[in-house]
Image (cartoon, rainbow, N blue to C red; front, side, top):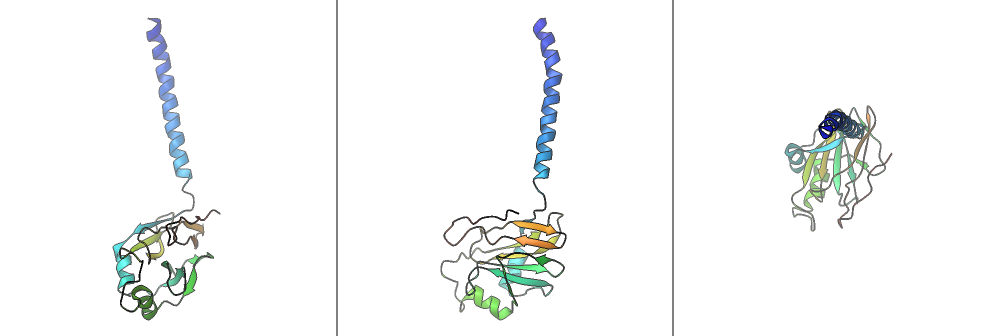
Length: 169
């Protein structure tokens, strides 16, 4: 009998402890998101770059060597990019074609399965577009500095598969 009573007393305490721990885990998970956005793969963005039909209401930037960038981004006009990793470019159809085709041939060592993504802010709005020229696996860290300023890391893998550092502000 004593064992049964002990179990009845302990069970509610264990349930309370379980629910409190679940609430704690949920709160910690939500707190970690902060002002970070994300890249959401989008075949339309990929097609936009590969057909050279770039939307006019974006400022364009590239990361990597001037002759062979690793990634291209377009940031909506209402946002401002704050990053030392990206170079502004007046991206024309001719320049984009030169970067992507290299005289009509695929660039050596470049994966044909490139990726296009929407750059999404923490609240779910589109901040810009992303196109990984070199490697479809390339990803980045997206951080909103304030409501209209975004910081984006360059692709997180270099040409040799070595991980680059993420933004830590």
